[in-house]
Amino acid sequence: MKLLLCLSMLFISSLPSSYSCNSKDENTLLQIKKHFNNPDLLSTWNPATDCCTSWTGIECTNGRVTLLSMSKDNNLVGHIPDQIGDLLELQSLEMSYMNLTGNIPRTITKLKHLDFIFLKWNRLSGPIPDYISELKNVTFMDLSYNKFTGPVPGWLTQMPKLQTFQIDNNSLTGPIPNSFGSFADSVPNLFLKNNKLSGKIPESLSKIDFQAVVLAGNSFTGDGSMFFGGNKRTVQVDLSRNKFEFDLSKVKFGKSMALLDLSHNRIFGKLPRELTELPLQRFNISYNRLCGKIPRGGKLQTFKSYEFAHNRCLCGSPLKKAC
Image (cartoon, rainbow, N blue to C red; front, top):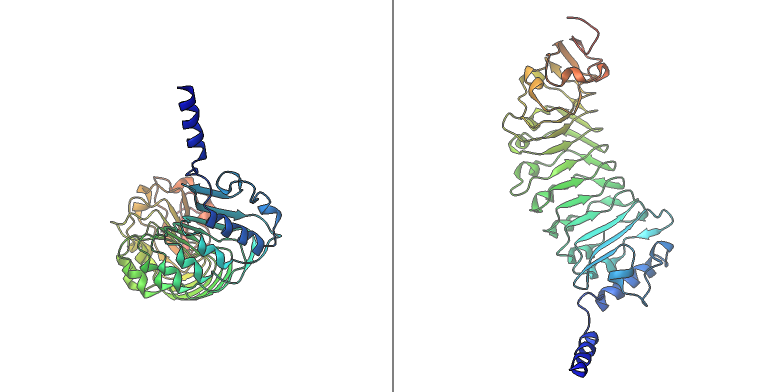
C-alpha cells in the first residue's frame, strides 16, 4: 500500500503543473526584457524561475500570461516592443510612467483578449492608430500624458465594450467626431482634458447619455448644454476653460449630477433652482456671465465664494454681494 502511494505521488509530481509558465510566453517576456536592454526593473525575469510565480509585474491564469505591468522607471527608454503581440492571452497591459517613445505597434491587434490598456505618462506620439479599434474586448484605455497628435478617434464607436477613454494632456486637435452621436452599445466615459481641441459640439451628442464627460482646457465653442438632460444619468461634466456660450437657466439636470465645473466660459443666464436638488460634490461656475440670485438650499451654500466669483451680476450667499 505504501509502495502504491509513493508511486502515485511520484507520478503526480512528474506531471507538468497547469500553473507553470507557458514556454512561448516566457520566451516572449525574455525578448521584451532584451529589447529594453535588461533593465533593473525586470531583474526578477530570470529563466531559472517560473515567470508566473516569481517575475515582477506578471500574473498568469493556467500558465498563460494575462497581466503585464511595467511602470515607474524613467531610466527605461525605447518604444513598445512588437513582441507584445505574442502574449496571446494577455488581458491587462500597463507600461506607464516611463520614457516610451514612438507609437503603439500594430502587433497589439493580436491580443484579442485584451481588456485594459494603460500607457499613460510616456512620450508616445503621432496619431492614435485606427487599428486599435480591432480590440473589441477593451473596456478601459488610458493614453493620457503623452504627445499624441491628430484628431479624437471617431472609431471609438466601433469598440462595443469600451467604458472609459482617457486621453488627457496630449496635443489632439480638431472637433469631437460626429460619430460620437452613435455609440450603439457601451457609452464610454470621455476624458479629453488639456488638448488643443476646438469647434462646436455635434448636436447628435444630445441623444447620448454619458456618465462622465471632461473637456476642460480646450477651445470648444458654442452650445455645451447637450451634455445635460433631465432624464440623463450623467454624474460628471467638466466643460471648464473653454469658450462655451449657452443660457444656463434653460438647462435641465439629471438627478445624479455630482461633479459640475463650468468655470472660465461665456455662459449666461440665471442659476436654475433645481441645482439645489442635486447631490453636488464639486461645483464651479466662476468666470462666466451669469446673473441673478444664487438659489438657497441643497449643497450650493457649502461651496466657496470663489467658485461663484467673476460673473456679471451674481449675488447672494456664499458671495458677499447681497441681492
